[in-house]
Image 1 (cartoon, rainbow, N blue to C red):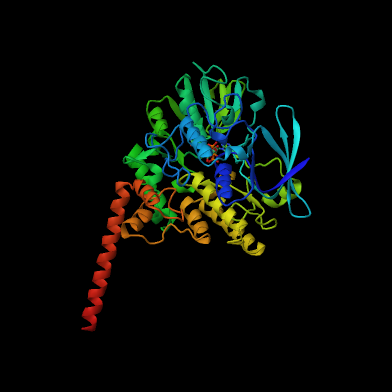
Image 2: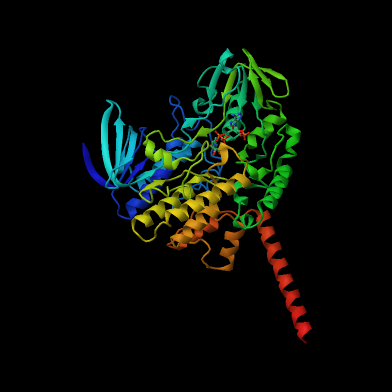
Length: 514
Ligand SMILES: NC(=O)C1=CN([C@@H]2O[C@H](COP(=O)(O)OP(=O)(O)OC[C@H]3O[C@@H](n4cnc5c(N)ncnc54)[C@H](OP(=O)(O)O)[C@@H]3O)[C@@H](O)[C@H]2O)C=CC1
């Protein structure tokens, strides 16, 4: 049975879906969110009985200044890196503040999405309990169901012979869940943020923990010289060649935690060529040898593994922390064909949002992996852009221009990052948001005062910088985002050097003329 034809139907009530709903509702659109679970929050809604989402000990690894909804800061008493309970409470408070709940249908899984000949979208869903089929139509659809749903299981020779336990990080909810880990030996395969979090969690109880990594990692501490590490990812650094920034970043890591080779980390690439692995706790566990690092797995045996260098490890459990495959199982084949690129995790979307063949009526919100800072402010700018498109204040470029841009971005990512399925949707938060902000007349760098400009160039500026209705409150929030002392020092150095060069140049010109 088809009911209301909504202006915008949103798939998923995680942060990306909620922020999209907030902006669409404020613009007067009729909105419906369809959510598979019984709660808002997406990956932040801890559930020990369901795969996916956070585990019991998860803390966000981006500071609360760069992972928040605009105009809605985390409470003051929350630490720089909130834990998942605090993040969920914050998301729930946002949902209440903007009365989003009444626009959500919970416990309903979207099963199919297709476009009718008229251009409207037909969305089918299945509600539980009872498995009742539902169907809605909408003028446009925003897919905000996340890209960390389908585990990526690599093929490892001999895995079928292994006698111990095998699971993916999405199934690991904490050392008190799953199965007894006390006195067992665990092999963690993969050295991204899941690998680090799982290794640190399991090391509290297990007898021995080894992380297997084929390319090592530069492990970023949560704090550098007393400030959250993400606060160093300032605008000025994106204006410099990334290799220079990477060198500085590597020096900062070495100054904060020592040479990574000492702890066995053996990074195979420059730091900024891959997604940052954050792990303050990991370094101390490596120092106390509660966790060890090994190379790639050559093959699995009945009771353990053989690494690439021929050494062996006897393991009771293998935990694959090997990331996710981008997948939206409800897309019809026709849409799937235009959305996904030729290789694994490649998406053929303009600004990771729109298909040139489909246009503005189907948007992907949050289909981005920010290389610095958090996803939330990117999703929020995408939501605002989408609403502006709805209101016909802006329009998308032609499909030819969109495709050219997609190709250019793909080429850039291939060169800039390690060319792997892990980096196909990587983007720089500030650069991305600055670009979208310029289109919707919300630029962060509109001049207010030299002090402000300094803050936005040598600091990250936080999530409120792109808000277009400037109020004292918003300006205060931007000023509350700390600028690390080292970045202030860099700022003063650049300004003094600039001043000296200008004065010297002018003096030379004047003396030449005179
Ligand atoms: N606390 C937090 O805020 C957390 C955030 N996250 C975020 O969630 C996202 C997903 O993270 P994560 O689950 O760690 O996934 P990632 O994709 O970031 O990392 C996957 C890891 O698995 C390795 N890997 C992939 N394929 C293979 C293979 N075939 N053989 C061996 N190793 C392989 C990769 O190595 P290689 O580099 O060699 O390809 C990499 O080390 C990220 O954005 C992350 O930042 C995750 C956990 C906690």
